[in-house]
Image 1 (cartoon, helix red, strand yellow):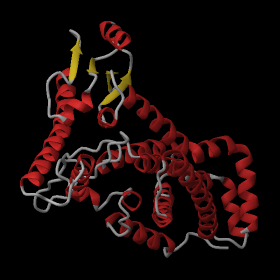
Image 2: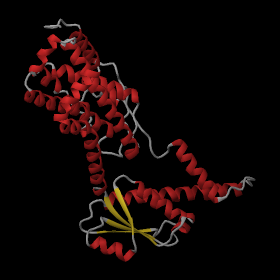
Image 3: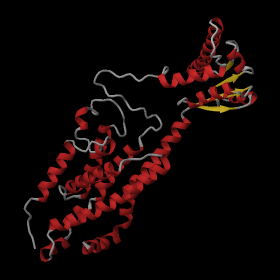
Image 4: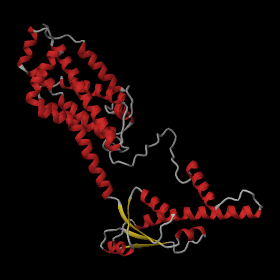
Length: 372
């Protein structure tokens, strides 16, 4: 193996730029595309101005609810500046939370709590207004429930003597425990969709596609080695062609897996995304085997590159890694042959993995053309 490494290092001296590029390509491309899409998502949010005439617990809670909305980019501004930005169409709408907001909520007074402004170019004023109204009605509903409890306590001479704040806190606790305002529904035999709205493209799905492509392109060494005149010297050495290719295969796979672990660490630090090392190892083994066996079928590098790009594109679209759409292409039958399945879903056993093992066994035990 030492001589194999020495020989391979001699090859890499002439090709180190392309090798390093394709080894780092999945990491760099995933980070770049993720950052770009995050920026686009942030810029595509509706800019809404909020003016606060008082700063109380109820107002703070309302602004946190508005800020948490996935389609809103909230800005807290003075009234003059907010209205001026609305006139310049830098804001889609402006909402002024009036003074005594918390007091009016507690007294079940729903008049003139919030004033909204829109321009002739406001596109999302109505949905944002309805969302804010729903939050306010939620708060007034809690306040009304608290007054009802207090009245019942006085009517029936209750001894608990619940405070207003305790009733509100209990109401929020029940809402969180019982999930009163948000419920996931699914039909019979229909899997629930994962709620992942934080990123347009999942990090590991992107990396899986780019990694598969880079692995195919790195393994063009198989075509180069088989076309090299130096390969004829193996007939006079202690290595067979099969042994020579296998040792190089193991060397490349170890290097690729080392870069995979580096990518996993980078994604965890940057995006707080983690994946099981077992999933990563199985995916690396299967993709390396696929690239090795696939490269053995070609003699022309250009045709190999063209087919590799087309194959990865079909796999990316069909698996839903790049286009998560419920379509005829992305169907259950494709899941069984999806090369990204070991990485994305942890399904190690499917038609793809079985075929890879069978083809690898067929190549391993086939009769060689020559042997030293």
